Image (cartoon, rainbow, N blue to C red; front, side):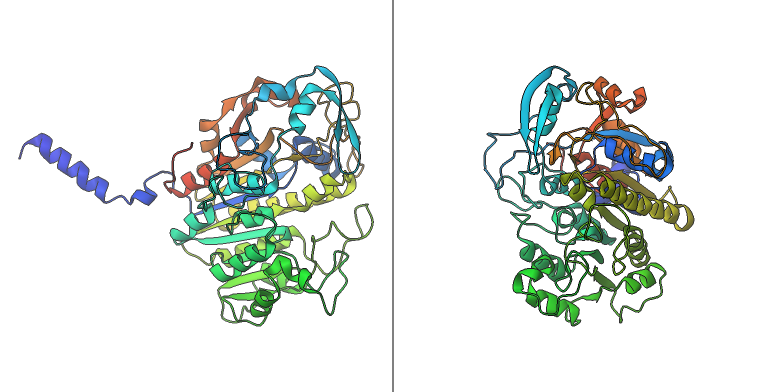
Length: 479
């Protein structure tokens, strides 16, 4: 045999020893994605001003990677169209157009003057949380309403499925119903986000996830009060009455917890799951952990629900038992609800709750894992409210005004629904440089006052690809 043939044979044998599904580098043991739902950049800033009196003091501010992401959907239909007609396009330059306009945006809680062409562009053709979750979890853009469902009516494989195939564990945590759009995107498949019963049933019956935490409890109202005999509709967020009864009576693969004390015990590693390795936790509220309590101001929290930090720590305590690692998604879901209501105090309250969950994750990585084996991504699924500074009716995209720690910043809302703003993405750990390697420049991001090296953006589908790349998982090429 010639020398060249021997070399070729040795190369072929070496290639055969590499699993095709794990052929990429690097190899992360864990990937944790934290999503603050509906938070444009000024939402992040408003919370930091209130909490710290300045920017730069949040855990993600120390991350190596700071870029932005586009969030537009494939189309704004509410069902598969089976056609490319009506596909949404995105041109970031149009976001920054400061040409004055006399348009009016009709919202749910009121009407909003257009002021600038860029604002109008931001308020048009926006994604809903389902299409955004589908993009983040499966790497594929789809129609609004889709839960890992393509515009051609086919199921899309999401990162949770890829994760479990590698032997790692899957966890999903949210401050809203665990069958809601964002958590559903990492757990299920459905033609419609509104099929909560179908989504909840799939979550329980599939046994895919090791941990699922959120709200949706049928026996508790949004104000935290108990309901002795709820009607059938109240069970929709937990897969319907029959699924709930199987879950809570121990007739599924999951242990079930609901008391605040049990979440807190699990966060300390002190709870017995009765021999089961999987757990679903349904906090005692049918809506959100805190946002839907009475009143509109911050404070006076319900005392029967845990905070997002506790849910996050509890989830990690279960997931880390898997020696091969895990994927965890944590959602601050009620940030979006507060933005829809243009409720600044509770928007900031919810964002701070989310930021404390990020801190819990960073603390775990630095004390029980390492940045050499874990990737953490912190982002949002879309903007909401087009929150800007008080003079943003005169000066396009003027920032919110800091009033010092403990004081609400000065702001102006420009919508009460989603936007297609470029939104922040922070990443740190093994594989984080995937974002910088795949980002494209947008000089218009100078409008946000960020350094030149951060004036770049990826697409929201790149979150899926960054996670898969970190795990060393081969996935279909980007369309």
